[in-house]
Each structure stands twice: as structure tokens, then as C-alpha cells.
Length: 380
Ligand SMILES: Nc1nc2c(ncn2[C@@H]2O[C@H](COP(=O)(O)OP(=O)(O)OP(=O)(O)O)[C@@H](O)[C@H]2O)c(=O)[nH]1
Image (cartoon, rainbow, N blue to C red; front, side, top):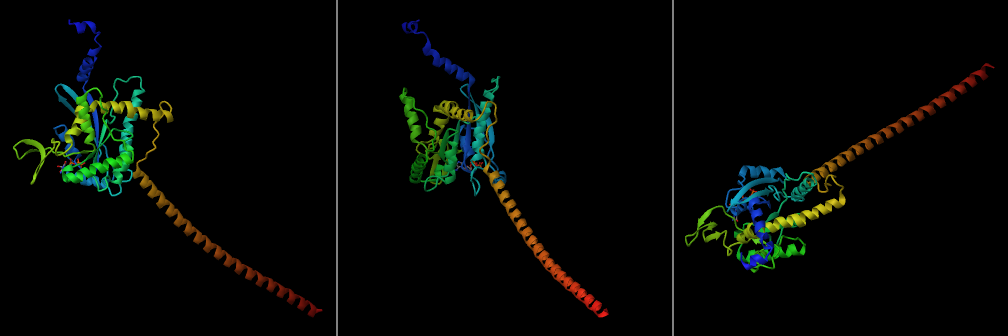
């Protein structure tokens, strides 16, 4: 035993114990992919984990989904292992999101799903036996963007405004190989400005003050936000003969992993290497805690969740039904009013006839009276 060991009580060994526990238990990460169809969500997911976790949707299913007019929730689970560390991964896709001409409120079913996971966890946490808790709380929502001249489409802004309160929101510019360097830089600046102006709080990793290497890494990640990504499941050969994941064009190869070409590497660092624990911890300590506190203020123990958000698609249908019903009632009322007026007019006519006949009878009666008087005076 050296002098240092003799003097210390052993607290410094705690990180090693922690490391052993975490290595043994592995981790569970739940990611949500949000964004309109065809922006490369499936490709990104498979590129990120270098396996075919998510199958691509075939054209026919994609086409039929476009006519369904609803946002679905599609869950894919996978177990990944690297150097004896197990990651239980859950990917939540949202087919149908933002795919329609009128996308009003399409974020609501997604928001409801996210809140339902907090709710489900809260309910299980209130039970006496908490050994079998199923935790599907979303640790990060990757929001795939198709940028426009002034930064963001109104729908994306509205959706992100709501999502950022319930989940670690990470906006990404999808298929960034489609834009020139200049346009991409402009989009990045504008998106950041718009998000800032509208107070959409996107996820920012916390910087560990003590570790300068880690600090530099995190600063690199933050400065790359919003990430502009390129994904590809294909291996391609570069001009200098390397085999890389990339997209081949007549003018050259876009390398997924090159920081010169896109921010894929920074995003992967954030999600898997540097900030996975921070994402999980922030979900638990800040986002879930806020949800729990809000609910506890308006509900009593065991009371079901107040469903303030109804699916807007149903709301629209309900509204149009209500309008149709009101219109039908209005038409029927007008028909009855006409019918009533006709009846009243007919009654008035009949009354007039009756009155005329009454007058006629009275005259005849008078005539009879007069004739009677005449005949009796003649007899006398
Ligand atoms: N240029 C370019 N194309 C991409 C990129 N990522 C994916 N793609 C292509 O875009 C098409 C759609 O990709 P998917 O990954 O199926 O898109 P998705 O968002 O999952 O679409 P849905 O399955 O309809 O929800 C495929 O042909 C991909 O090869 C990218 O970064 N750049």
C-alpha cells in the first residue's frame, strides 16, 4: 500500500464503482424522429447505428399513408452491444407528420404521445411495486427540417414551440447535400435566429467546467447547431480510394463522417458519445419533473389526466359536422316557417269566407224576419 492509499478513505473510487454498475446495467435510450416523409429519417437512423434497424417504407405503403390523413406512431426496438456495453434502443417514428396540405395541429398526436409516456411513468411510479416499470419517456426528439428562404416553415415553428416544452428538442437540417455551402450557412443562421426570436428552447448540452477536452468537444457540438446532416447506408469509394459511407455525385462524394461535408459526426457525438447520459438525466430531472409538478397542481392523487389536447383532425371533423347540422336545422326551420305562413294565410282566407257567409246568413235571416212581418200585417 503506498502513502496516498494509506491516507485516503477510498471515496475517490466511487466513479469506478459507478462505471461498473452502469456497464453492467447498460442504458436505455428512446429517440423520436419527427419530420415530413422522405427527409431521410430511416436512412439517418440506420446510418447512426451502422445497422438496418429500421426498414424503409415501400412506395405503396407510403402512398396509402398519404391518403389516410393521420399521424401515426411507429416504434422500433433494438438491442445494441459494443465492448460489452448494452444499449436498449427505442426509435419512435411519426409517419404522416407534416405530409398534408393542411397540417394544422398535426403535432398534437405527437405531443400527446410524449406526454402519455410521462403520464405512464408517473402512474407506475405511484404504485407500491416499482420493479417492473416500463419507461418509454423520449430522451430526444430529432426534428428533421426542410429549410425555406426565411428559415423555417410556420408549421415546423409551431410544432417545435410545443415540443420543446416536453422533450429535448434537436432540430436537424435534412439532406444538407442538396444545398450549396452558402445557402446552408444562411439557413443555419436564419433557423437559429427564428428559434431564438420565438423562444424555442432547443437542447444544449451542459458544459463540464472541469474537463477542458470534454469542454472543447461540447463547444464544437454547440457551434454546429442546428446540425446539417447527410445520411447514407451505402459504402462508396472516394477519389483517393477510401471506402466510406457517403453519397456519390458526378462532381464527387459527400462523406457522411467528414466534418468538412456535414455535421453528422457532431450529432452522433451528441447522441451517443458525449451527451447520452445528459439527455437521459435532463429528461428525468427537468422535463419529467416539470410535467409531474404541473400535473400535481391540477390533479388529485390517482385522478386521470386532463385531456386538454384533442386531436385537431377530429376537432376539424367535429366542427364540420356541427356546421352541417346547424345548416340542416336552419333549412328545416325556414321550411317550417314557410309552411306555417301558408297555413296562417289559408286560415285567414277561410276565416274571411266564414265571415262573409256569416254576414250573408245574417242578411237572409233579416230578410226572413222582414218577410214574416209583411205577411202577418197583410193577414190582419
Ligand atoms: N440527397 C440525400 N438523400 C437522402 C439523404 N438521406 C436519405 N436520402 C434519400 O431520401 C430518400 C428517403 O429516405 P428515407 O430514409 O426513406 O426517408 P424517411 O424520412 O424515412 O421517409 P418515410 O419512410 O416516408 O417516413 C431515400 O431515397 C434516401 O436514399 C441525404 O442525406 N441526402
